[in-house]
Image (cartoon, rainbow, N blue to C red):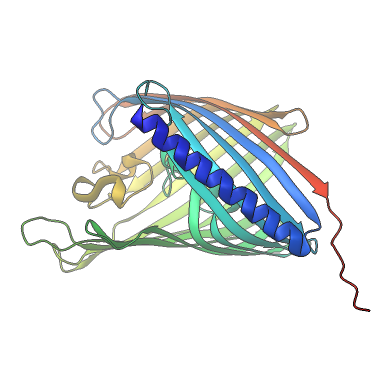
Length: 366
């Protein structure tokens, strides 16, 4: 009962902030009041018995995110939202977690800038599971920091972006933790070039009696790809070079540079896609046993010491009702160099947005 009351007080506080926030902004210069709500439920089941680099487990959860904000001068936006997460099976908890989103956005045809705490979906790059696993994207669906992107429609689907995500504030347990990220893509005639980059910094409070230290984790993946249509099917082929640079300053005192290559091939039609992702190379998660998910946020199978990770996926993805409802389901057979396992997932997403036009109040001086 005490936990429910605490959550209710938090929600009431957030709603009070929302009302004060909207009323204040509307009184000053608003042109449009934006209201909306996002809903996502995810079932993610891992069957990894006998596999060496990850464990079996099931995630089943739902998230509701009501949001409100103001848009003015067409390109400026202030938004406030509350993320409410409930893990199924947490019967003793009213809500499993509550967080906020609070950000300013400038959206022009070629330039987009976001500052504050905003949805991770605003970022276009780092989509592969090497950087962020599905579970991490769900539970850490926000970026706290800044995002800037330049897009040029005259060059097809080209862009370059930069983001910083500050994930750990200095306290008794964590001195600081942040990620600097960048991505870009440019089509050139019948193929495309691109890159994904992340520099992670993770600093635990130094204690001579523990192995926790200061760790730098740099990952760069330049790639070349070819996407085309043939016989009504959409085909995407991509070859990536993966270079990592890591250092545990307290425990190792030296840089290590594991690397490898990845081939991705996909063919799809009517929302159904069959794909294969094959990585061959060194272990990219060198200190995973020491720091785990605190440092590495991608698929744990990239820690393989067998020099291979393969994932064969059959999936379906489609949007309904004017793109307000999206369904994604799939099954993946994965090999980590020791044995095969499977992963099944089902995700339903709802995205509703409404705009209410407002007239700015004008003061006349006589």
